[in-house]
Image (cartoon, rainbow, N blue to C red; front, side):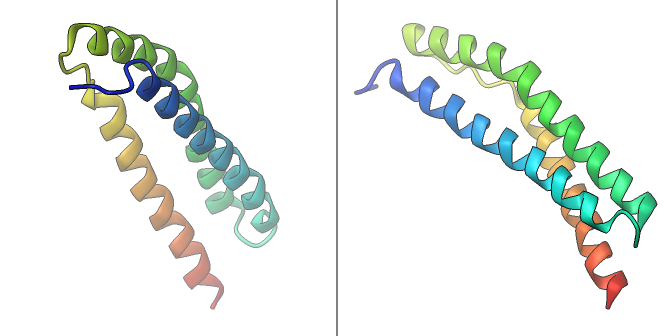
Length: 104
């Protein structure tokens, strides 16, 4: 039973907005390494930008699905965008780890 019907999609939307802001911040911070590792920096910026774009595009649909799911009390999860974001996050972590280790 849902005790706060309607509030969960808003909290999820706020969490995705924070994630979006952090991805933009990662892309901006990656610019600091541009002269040391140009190709790696461009890859990190591109990947973070694509992830942020995926969040912006997909979040509206996710919000509507979550609202309908609460009304119907049924599952509404679409795993494809979440799986894509998880894989991109792992790739982003690997790229940044490589950049840190390459500097040492």
